[in-house]
Length: 171
Picture 1 (cartoon, helix red, strand yellow):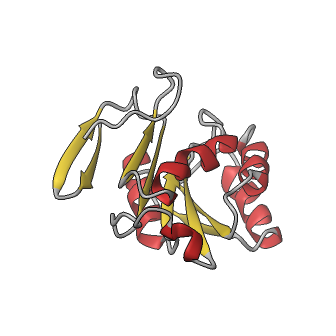
Picture 2 (cartoon, rainbow, N blue to C red; picture 1 turned 135 degrees about the vertical axis):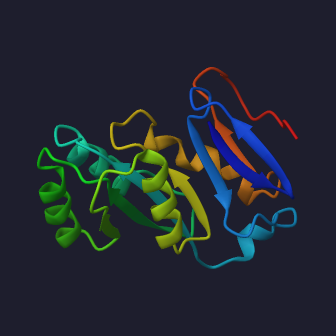
Protein backbone atom coordinates (compact mmCIF):
# COMPACT_ATOMS: atom_id res chain seq x y z
CA UNK A 1 0.00 0.00 0.00
CA UNK A 2 0.81 3.68 -0.08
CA UNK A 3 1.03 5.73 3.11
CA UNK A 4 1.06 9.50 3.46
CA UNK A 5 1.01 11.87 6.39
CA UNK A 6 -1.82 14.43 6.25
CA UNK A 7 -2.40 16.99 9.01
CA UNK A 8 -0.59 14.74 11.48
CA UNK A 9 -2.61 11.62 10.58
CA UNK A 10 -1.21 8.65 8.69
CA UNK A 11 -3.36 7.56 5.77
CA UNK A 12 -2.78 4.10 4.22
CA UNK A 13 -4.06 3.33 0.75
CA UNK A 14 -4.10 0.18 -1.30
CA UNK A 15 -2.00 0.65 -4.46
CA UNK A 16 -4.82 -0.48 -6.71
CA UNK A 17 -6.91 2.51 -5.64
CA UNK A 18 -4.25 5.17 -5.77
CA UNK A 19 -3.91 6.37 -9.34
CA UNK A 20 -2.01 9.53 -8.59
CA UNK A 21 -1.00 11.37 -5.48
CA UNK A 22 -0.40 15.10 -5.41
CA UNK A 23 0.63 16.95 -2.30
CA UNK A 24 2.00 20.30 -1.27
CA UNK A 25 5.53 19.82 0.10
CA UNK A 26 4.76 21.60 3.37
CA UNK A 27 1.27 20.04 3.61
CA UNK A 28 -0.11 23.48 4.39
CA UNK A 29 -3.25 24.76 2.79
CA UNK A 30 -3.29 28.01 0.91
CA UNK A 31 -5.93 30.42 2.19
CA UNK A 32 -8.89 30.60 -0.19
CA UNK A 33 -7.70 31.97 -3.55
CA UNK A 34 -4.20 32.83 -2.31
CA UNK A 35 -2.41 30.56 -4.79
CA UNK A 36 -3.12 33.21 -7.41
CA UNK A 37 -0.81 35.58 -5.49
CA UNK A 38 2.24 33.39 -6.10
CA UNK A 39 4.09 34.46 -9.20
CA UNK A 40 5.80 31.12 -9.72
CA UNK A 41 5.39 27.57 -8.42
CA UNK A 42 6.98 24.31 -9.45
CA UNK A 43 5.51 20.83 -9.84
CA UNK A 44 7.91 17.94 -9.25
CA UNK A 45 6.84 14.99 -11.37
CA UNK A 46 8.36 11.89 -9.79
CA UNK A 47 8.92 9.03 -12.22
CA UNK A 48 10.19 5.65 -11.02
CA UNK A 49 11.42 3.64 -14.03
CA UNK A 50 12.34 0.00 -14.48
CA UNK A 51 12.74 -1.69 -17.88
CA UNK A 52 10.35 0.56 -19.82
CA UNK A 53 12.39 1.14 -23.02
CA UNK A 54 9.38 0.63 -25.30
CA UNK A 55 7.23 3.38 -23.74
CA UNK A 56 9.46 5.69 -21.69
CA UNK A 57 10.23 8.15 -24.49
CA UNK A 58 6.54 8.61 -25.34
CA UNK A 59 5.68 8.95 -21.65
CA UNK A 60 8.32 11.62 -21.08
CA UNK A 61 7.16 13.53 -24.15
CA UNK A 62 3.58 13.58 -22.81
CA UNK A 63 4.73 14.59 -19.32
CA UNK A 64 6.87 17.46 -20.61
CA UNK A 65 4.03 18.82 -22.77
CA UNK A 66 1.11 18.23 -20.40
CA UNK A 67 -0.81 21.40 -19.54
CA UNK A 68 -0.17 22.91 -16.11
CA UNK A 69 -1.93 25.67 -14.21
CA UNK A 70 -0.88 29.23 -14.96
CA UNK A 71 2.43 30.32 -13.38
CA UNK A 72 3.53 26.75 -12.72
CA UNK A 73 6.74 25.23 -14.02
CA UNK A 74 7.77 21.57 -13.86
CA UNK A 75 10.72 19.39 -13.12
CA UNK A 76 10.75 15.72 -14.03
CA UNK A 77 12.66 13.71 -11.43
CA UNK A 78 13.38 10.30 -12.94
CA UNK A 79 14.84 7.45 -10.92
CA UNK A 80 15.92 4.45 -12.95
CA UNK A 81 15.82 1.39 -10.69
CA UNK A 82 18.76 -0.36 -12.38
CA UNK A 83 17.01 -1.19 -15.66
CA UNK A 84 18.67 -3.92 -17.73
CA UNK A 85 16.89 -3.43 -21.07
CA UNK A 86 18.55 -0.24 -22.35
CA UNK A 87 16.08 2.14 -20.68
CA UNK A 88 18.82 4.10 -18.91
CA UNK A 89 20.61 4.94 -22.18
CA UNK A 90 17.33 6.38 -23.53
CA UNK A 91 16.88 8.37 -20.32
CA UNK A 92 20.43 9.76 -20.52
CA UNK A 93 19.81 10.94 -24.08
CA UNK A 94 16.53 12.61 -23.11
CA UNK A 95 18.00 14.21 -19.96
CA UNK A 96 20.78 15.78 -22.06
CA UNK A 97 18.18 17.19 -24.44
CA UNK A 98 15.52 18.47 -22.01
CA UNK A 99 16.62 20.68 -19.06
CA UNK A 100 13.54 19.96 -16.87
CA UNK A 101 14.70 16.32 -16.55
CA UNK A 102 16.75 15.41 -13.48
CA UNK A 103 17.98 11.82 -13.85
CA UNK A 104 19.16 9.48 -11.10
CA UNK A 105 19.98 5.77 -11.12
CA UNK A 106 19.97 3.10 -8.43
CA UNK A 107 23.06 0.90 -8.57
CA UNK A 108 20.94 -2.14 -7.75
CA UNK A 109 17.24 -2.85 -8.20
CA UNK A 110 15.47 -1.76 -5.03
CA UNK A 111 11.82 -1.65 -6.09
CA UNK A 112 9.31 1.04 -6.98
CA UNK A 113 8.92 2.28 -3.41
CA UNK A 114 12.65 2.94 -3.10
CA UNK A 115 12.67 4.74 -6.46
CA UNK A 116 9.77 6.95 -5.35
CA UNK A 117 11.51 7.73 -2.03
CA UNK A 118 14.70 8.70 -3.90
CA UNK A 119 12.67 10.94 -6.20
CA UNK A 120 10.98 12.62 -3.21
CA UNK A 121 14.40 13.31 -1.69
CA UNK A 122 15.62 14.92 -4.93
CA UNK A 123 12.44 16.91 -5.67
CA UNK A 124 12.59 20.69 -5.33
CA UNK A 125 9.05 21.60 -6.35
CA UNK A 126 6.21 23.08 -4.31
CA UNK A 127 4.00 20.14 -5.28
CA UNK A 128 4.80 16.55 -6.23
CA UNK A 129 3.01 13.89 -8.22
CA UNK A 130 4.01 10.29 -8.99
CA UNK A 131 3.87 9.42 -12.69
CA UNK A 132 4.53 5.82 -13.68
CA UNK A 133 6.67 5.45 -16.81
CA UNK A 134 4.21 3.01 -18.41
CA UNK A 135 1.55 5.75 -18.87
CA UNK A 136 -0.85 4.08 -16.46
CA UNK A 137 -1.72 7.64 -15.38
CA UNK A 138 -2.70 10.39 -17.83
CA UNK A 139 -0.44 13.47 -17.65
CA UNK A 140 -3.31 15.58 -18.99
CA UNK A 141 -4.96 15.18 -15.54
CA UNK A 142 -2.28 17.18 -13.68
CA UNK A 143 -4.24 20.45 -13.70
CA UNK A 144 -7.38 18.72 -12.46
CA UNK A 145 -5.45 16.99 -9.67
CA UNK A 146 -3.74 20.23 -8.60
CA UNK A 147 -6.89 22.38 -8.57
CA UNK A 148 -8.14 21.46 -5.04
CA UNK A 149 -4.67 22.21 -3.65
CA UNK A 150 -4.35 25.52 -5.44
CA UNK A 151 -7.83 26.56 -4.35
CA UNK A 152 -7.05 25.73 -0.70
CA UNK A 153 -9.58 22.89 -0.45
CA UNK A 154 -7.14 20.02 0.17
CA UNK A 155 -3.80 19.06 1.72
CA UNK A 156 -3.41 16.06 -0.59
CA UNK A 157 -5.23 14.70 -3.63
CA UNK A 158 -5.61 11.03 -4.51
CA UNK A 159 -6.80 10.11 -7.98
CA UNK A 160 -8.62 6.84 -8.56
CA UNK A 161 -9.54 5.02 -11.72
CA UNK A 162 -12.48 3.52 -9.79
CA UNK A 163 -14.13 6.79 -8.83
CA UNK A 164 -15.55 8.90 -11.64
CA UNK A 165 -16.57 12.51 -11.30
CA UNK A 166 -15.38 15.45 -9.30
CA UNK A 167 -13.55 15.71 -6.00
CA UNK A 168 -14.80 14.03 -2.86
CA UNK A 169 -13.43 15.00 0.56
CA UNK A 170 -12.48 11.91 2.60
CA UNK A 171 -10.90 13.40 5.73
